[in-house]
Image (cartoon, rainbow, N blue to C red; front, side):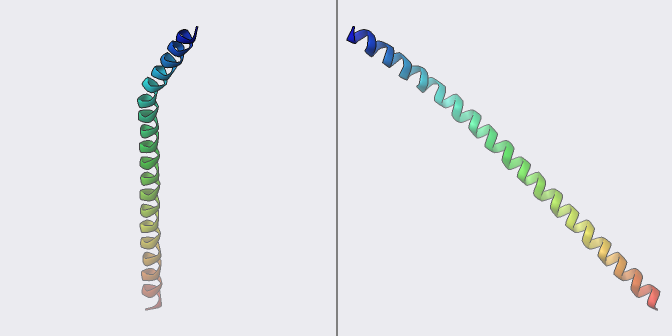
Length: 68
């Protein structure tokens, strides 16, 4: 009986060990997706800031031209 329990326990351990690399790979892929999303959001914010800066410069140039 004890051997049967040990065998079942060792089989369960083996199955869990086989699942571990898969779980780690899935977690790695999830983190990579999150990193890409964060990078895309940063790029979007950078582009928006550049556009806003250009808009402000354009408005100031227009004001200066009107004052002359």
